[in-house]
Structure formats: structure tokens, C-alpha cells
Length: 83
Image (cartoon, rainbow, N blue to C red):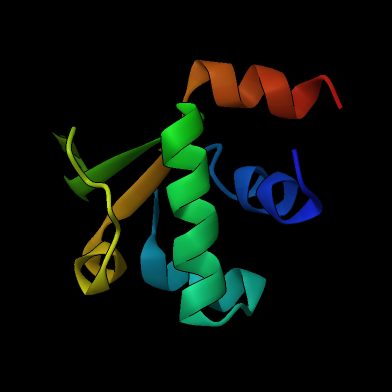
């Protein structure tokens, strides 16, 4: 797990909007979308169109990824907490 992935997972213990993540981490869009994509590929986060509407085919994250919500999975939290 990279430092960026760790920092991002740290924000995803609860469902968070893309805009919240961008504001909280102060990352550029490219960096945030890249890290979100990597975590999705690893199965460490889930993606939602709305708080109760999970998206199962979100990749690749494009401009639409900026409208989504994100949440760490159990596997992501366990990985995050073992470091």
C-alpha cells in the first residue's frame, strides 16, 4: 500500500463524496481519480452513485467519478489497520 492509498483509505471509514475527499486531501483531480481507481481494482473500496446505490462497474473512473461517493470495504479497512 502506498502512502497515498493509506491516506485515502483513512478518509473512507464512512461514506464520503468525491468533493469531500478532494477538499480534505487537497489533491488534484488526476491524483485522486488514479488512487480511487487503484483502490477499486484492489477491492479495498466501493463506489456509489448515491448513498444507497452501489456501482459495480465504475471503472474506469472518468469525469463521472467526480460525482460518486466512496467507502472502504472490510478488506480495505483490515489492510489499512495492519500497517
